[in-house]
Length: 603
Image (cartoon, rainbow, N blue to C red):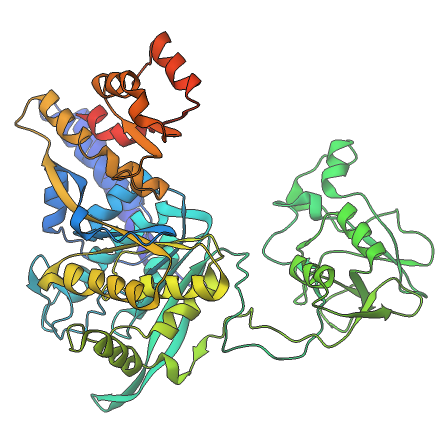
């Protein structure tokens, strides 16, 4: 039997702490006694803390210091506004940590996909930490990178929808650390590492490196869209009915027996689910102690229980009523069980919703029924690339392709090693739908933005993008923005772009009303960002944040004859006359959320 040495050491320390605590308690009391006992409690808490996970020295950045004493705000660069119709997209210039703090106000739980291509930390001038290049010889090279990326990824998680996805490009230098970090932060999701061939080979230390990596953080139930470089394999549309990621303790309503006639191999019925047995009082034990047995099995039938191909108890994918309905429709298939570790006599398969939609739309041909069973038979069914392979070798994804494209766009080498357009398009194709909101807070040359517009045109989609990057060496204005501007003009994309810059308002050393008045000047940008709109020069919408602005709007209502929607500060209360004017002019009121004002409430 193995011994946990670390636990033994912790237990020894805790014993010694308890001895010291007893000694202090029995000794003469003075003003330091309470402090000493408090210190012991803090040490004890640290010892009892989590001991599994990625361990690194945490470092603070200059931006951390700034955010402690300042509130980040957005200011629009109106001369850089691109008005070409279609969806409104956004480019934010500034430290991406501050940008993420602002997005936490406007997009918490609203982002569908986050794709980032952070510094790879090669030690070759690619990673700057607090205005200093991190060299290979820096003994904290990995800790600084992990401190930098972990703070941003933890904020990014807050922005994701329930089914949201994060995809991160990374090199071999930090891929192991990144995977461990993501497994810790996204403990309830899948973290999968995909290898991507990006070149013919780069010699280094006796090895030829031909690859980079994509780290996917996706929901357990992730079902990607088809990509253009996979698929075309003929296969049965039926899939196994067992769901091994849950068990009877988490989904008792999907725990029940299925009765199959041994001669005809037809489903003749189902037994009561564990939930039903509990509700009627037939079972009063612990969920985990429930035994897969039933006395309801009809004569001549076999009772099938949700047991995986590896012999583990799990649940069915469908509740019993859905199962029986799908059986009648021909969406369920019964066959002899070939697994030696599964005790069931028969195996059950079902048709996923995506296949059913293909049947209903006519994309999957139905050619009949199985003999003596309602189960449907189909024509040729080919996979369409819905599964993402974990090794990508397409030459379209080579870094040189991205470099040559950007060079042709600008006529110079102003941005090294951009990701190929085709590469990002395939990532978006697999992980977004037509209305997704996409965030890239290491926007670089803006490939994510152009890829979004390209995919929208190909699929008639309405995806929107938010790009964030600093302006080191004027990259935001001269590369990211300029690329988006040029491709919109060149390709006539039906897309618009607002350019914001992060600025900082000091919190202390000023009167409250001065601070509040200055914050109010930047609420408009937050409303635009959250709602994907533009107030400037737009007669159909308006915004009022103060009583004076509301008075001016209602008293001059004839000047706003085209306005149909008014965004109003959360603390404004229109009087009866103002209510009448707004109502008679059929102006929809949208109250600005009070969380925009959180900074004011905390001062």
